[in-house]
Image 1 (cartoon, each protein chain N blue to C red):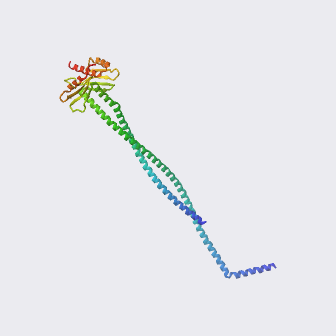
Image 2: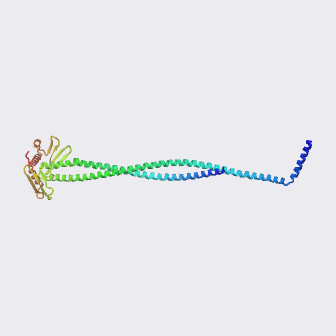
Image 3: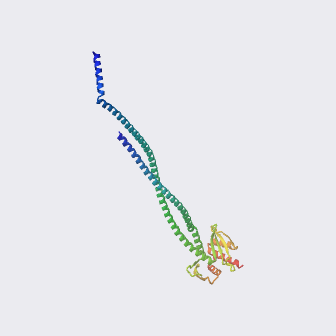
Length: 222
Length: 140
């Protein structure tokens, strides 16, 4: 029985296949299969392109990342430098201020000092001029020059003694110490020691000089 | 997902651009600060030189002050001493306002004051000196 059914079934399939093979549907399905193959191919190509695109995008992205990283490093570096420079500039500005003020103060101080010195100099010059004028009159008219010389000594130089030689000097020196020691005169005077004693006793320097002059005058007429 | 990736890419590109801008700004800032620094350095140098010059002025002023000091403490007192000595010794006081060529003054004697009036154009210097000294007392 089963064999009969199987044989029948087989026959039925073959009949269907032969009938189907010649129908449109078969052709349609073949066409569909080809279309399907084509579209798969196109899709695969598109996919490939897309993949390549995306690969490129990833590359670009990575490159950008690199650039950004380098930039950031550079930016940080330059920011640090700028901060440092700004601090230095600030420091210099402060230094400049201090120096300027300093210089201004000094200039003012020196200007004042200069004034003071100028005034003092003028006053001193005036005074010295008057003192000199006075001394000159005495010197010329009395024919006596009094000088302070080195070693705390006073030197007395008489002129107008010798009528033949008015300019010829007659001199002696005196120590400005307590004892008022005298140094020997030129020309030598015998009485000088005695005069010395007298002036020590009486303190009459005026008479001392007058007597010395008299003694000098006497040496000329001898 | 693709949109997200594209957006990230655009963002990254923008970031690079921004970074470039920031770098430019920083560069400009550095340039400016650098120039100011140079200017300030030059100013400081100039002021330092000025300060040095002022030091020289100070030294000079010090020297001048010393001179004034010497005048006040040595030269003038010395001149005063001598002038006073002349006056004390001769007891003569001059008339400084008299006509030139005239010897005019007063001799302050122990009891009387004697006027002095000599014409130096007519008399020898020795005569004048002798005369003036004759007024000075030789008595101790």
